[in-house]
Image (cartoon, rainbow, N blue to C red; front, side, top):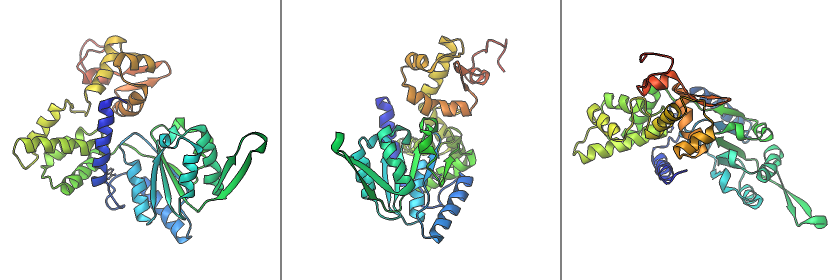
Length: 336
Ligand code: ADE
């Protein structure tokens, strides 16, 4: 991650906590997931059991962590939040697990970054609530087994394919894929955020922000805040459509929500590699981006827009990408 991306992520995190929905009523979109989760939670509550383990996956910023918070609030459970890279040693996981109480929820973000040794300890903890720890080395090594309270693990990942299949198969409550939101849902999210932040915003401005939000709540909320800054500096107190337009243009966000880095990625494929296919590693070097950022941040939305394809031979810019960038596609003699 670049320094700028890290700063952005930090800012997004603090922004999220003020605007984060607390309950189902405030959580907009992902309707099918909500319906399934409500049933799962209600049934578990009736049986007086902890809900079964859940796995959420999908691109960054779509509300996986938020869903875990909503589940915890709605079921009045304690939520303990950690992440794959934060659990370095078996001892770290053992300490987290042994500090859980009955029906507590453990949320592990970036679950694809859990290491193998940690996964091995997690399996029996998930399946039979037992924690097996090896004490000592060599012939005198012993295993002690601790019983854990009935807890629920909620794991989230942007990279489901990197999760080992034994780990995936242990999410007995289900695996749920979060999708990009509709423009209408994003408008509702931005309106709600504007109300919380006491920002006045015109309907057309809501539409403009939503259209450029990559259909991602985290991005939409960030654009709302940047637009608010712009309006404040211009000594205005209403986000008009014109103001939204100006502030988003200043951020170099185009009408599809692409930023400089997205356009640079597409332009590199087109100009340096004849439109592709080009291998991910080569593309990363040519754009000075890291592979994970390309795969997890830029590509999901470019694929969603139909601007980029992942093929077995590498990444390919589609004719639509050419049109968007106003570049003539080799197979045409005019712009489509
Ligand atoms: N913030 C992040 N995700 C959200 C959602 N689904 N609904 C409302 N606000 C959100």
